[in-house]
Amino acid sequence: MVKENIEKIRENIKKAAEKSGRSPEDITLLAVTKTVDFGPMEEAKECGVLSFGENRVQELIRKKPHFEGIDWHLIGHLQTNKVKQVVGNASLIHSVDSLRLAKEIDKHSKELGIITDILAEVNMAGEESKFGLKPAETEEFIKEAAALGNICIKGLMTVAPFTENPEDNRIYFRRLRELLIDINSKNIDNVNMSVLSMGMTGDYEVAIEEGATIVRVGTGIFGERNYNK
Ligand SMILES: *Cc1c(COP(=O)(O)O)cnc(C)c1O
Image (tube, rainbow, N blue to C red; front, side, top):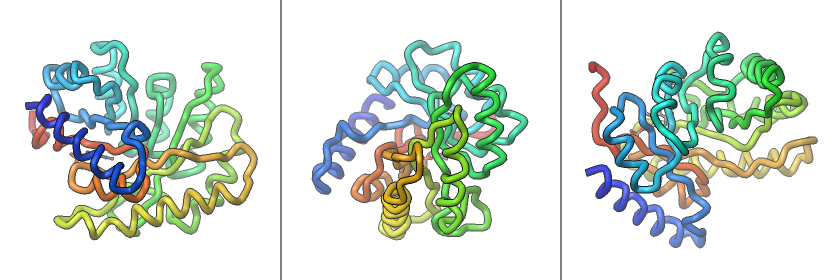
C-alpha cells in the first residue's frame, strides 16, 4: 500500500508543480514517520523516499540507527532540553520558533564543530493551539538568529490549520512565501532563504502551487496513525 500511495502522491506533486510552472524535482517529499513501524518505513525507502520527518526527538534517535542513507528532519516542537540530542542527528530542524531555542542549537552545534540547518516556524493563521513565530516578529527573529555562527537559516515552515477544504489554506501558504521573499529582500547578512516547508496530506498540492519546496506527508503515505501502540 505504501508503494501505491507514494506513486499517487508523486503523480499529484508532478501535476501541482506543472500547473504552477515549477519543476517537480524542486519539491522534496518528506515522509512523516511518527508512530510508523520499521516495515512501512523500509517500504518508503525502497520507493526512493529518502527523507523522513519525526515529531519527537526520542523517536528520531531510536529509529535513526535502523536506516542507512536517510535524511532525518525534526518537524515537531523542540524543547531546549532536547536540543543536545538532536543536534548532529537531524539534517534540518523545521520547528525553530524562539531565539532561545536558536541559541541553544547554535551552542551545541558549536561544541560539535558543525553548522545546523534550521527553518523558522511561523504560525500563519495565528492559531492559539499552535507553535510558531508571529508573522510580524519573524524578520526580527531572523535578524538575530542570523548572527549566530553555527546555525544556517534555510527558510520558513508553517503548519496550516486543519481543514476539509485545502483551498482555505492557500492564503497562509501564499503569505508564508511572501514573507520569505520580503525578508530575503532586506539584505540581512547570511540570510538567503530558499526553503518553504508547507503542506501536509490534506493540502500539499495547494502548498506546491504556492511555492512549497518541502511537503510533509504522513497519513497520505502510511495511512491513519495509531498513537495508542
Ligand atoms: C504529523 C505532521 C505532519 C503530517 O501530517 P499528515 O496530515 O499525516 O500528512 C506534517 N507536519 C507536522 C509538523 C506534523 O506534526
